[in-house]
Image (cartoon, rainbow, N blue to C red):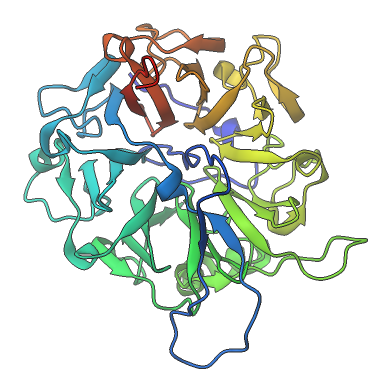
Length: 461
């Protein structure tokens, strides 16, 4: 059973499209120490360029632990990867098939599909392929129920990061190139990917960005990227301001004619912060369903997109179509930011978790009395957290001991409680597959949950 959200859920003027699923840009795995740095200075373009300062980012691929893939929730389109006979799981189940024996570095839940990145830089996908989100050709729906490798233009490419949205995926290569497949959608339906109104069933390489990309993130229908020069590029649907470079007037007046401008990656112009000299350079990017957060090398946070429940950290509830500095998000040093449909989560350097935005169904984890939070509010029940994730109306956290926690809407059995009841405060993940395993990361798809877990450490082994 899928719970319907009322029309007031999306605000009066920024109504997101009707979607098949509400994905999350799952946050990166714990960053760990700064020992693994990746510095990209070589430009993708062969044209001579003015030499500029390059940023350094942690090599998350090298720092990330490996584990096995687990899934639960709704799986009627194959997003659980458990075969055609498994349409639903109330507890985490081990994904086998072609992933059996593979060492997985990252797993991401899309709207109705799932993608995995292995330690040998390969990408696997399973789930719904109606809009090309699997990045591989399927002759019928049954071929999406089990994990298969994504080939095509990814053959021989060393992929180090992945992201996923409602109907698209993105992959970042070791040499700073971005590959996309699937389709972006807007309120009118299919928006396109490389071309207007057309999906891409196999990966294509973005060739419009002249510098190496060092970080990627996906919302429901947009992608945001950081280059080695600290610049931000976006593409996809911009109806709620999530691209940060097209005005509300331009989008509404242009209608479907604005598709070409949305589908070509373009830089985002970020204003200077009052009292600080020079333009900010960015090193981190995160996405909610319909908004984007970017973090500068100085730790300052900017945001743009849907803000109808203050999920951007701006108290007026008005969406932003251009980047704005967010003081309430810049007061602390954050390890990670994760966003759902109408709420955001922030993980600070001390392992504390803060939530902001809409609280219906318990997604804030602050109890039944808190239906909205207009500033980051600490979840007192959580300590020593190392990773956070979110789905549309659910939230997740993993602590340093490998225990996972969930809260929010229980309709799709995403919380491991085994019931459809909402959870208003964090509960610990349950299931036989977790009895001898520690959780590394967890995130939410449209109606399913994905986990990466490894065998528990005993006596240092």
